[in-house]
Image (cartoon, rainbow, N blue to C red; front, side, top):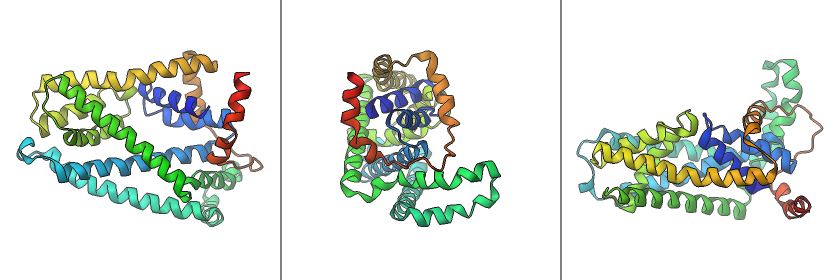
Length: 294
């Protein structure tokens, strides 16, 4: 069920605007695994912070290893990325530090967050206490070195796979780049997919085009063609996989938008709801899968 929720969430981000899959994924986990939406959404935030750390490391490797002769002289994009990388790295480290502290003592976190209750409407504040506790429980993985290392290694594998894909697609368009050069394009594409358009259409392509033309001096038409193919190569397999998973799970395209709408407005105000962490959910994963198949 966890795998299905992840695949469907990624596919939803590939076809719907505003990265809707980031909300759909924890919502599906909540429905299928009995995990609270707040706790599941916290794991998404932690995942994205780990991704940020890996991407910043790739940018750092590029800055140390790239060939200066491949860079367009006076590229403002290149100079901006250097400054942005330092700032993003600082934000990422600070955020992970805060999360580490929050996960270490959920009671203290609850006390801090409860001070904001007086500023909230009565009907909202009644469930605010339970939700903050559930949200903090989603960060418990950061206190478990083995699980955190596993998540980090998966993130490294995924981003290196993306970098290799960028390099291969660029090479197929006779764009001379090295693997290290593709690390810089990875950073730009991360910025591009944040653009709130359906499937990052436009933002993804423009990010690649700007990087290829402004930093590496690639002709515009060549860069646009490579961007279109790269987007198809990285998006279509996930969408097709999600279609199969949805069909086997009894979900159909007609209901996906409704699920996304429900996910973005999910409210858990029942303070008596037991708090489950992702690890608690995964412990019963195998047994639930067997029951589902039967």
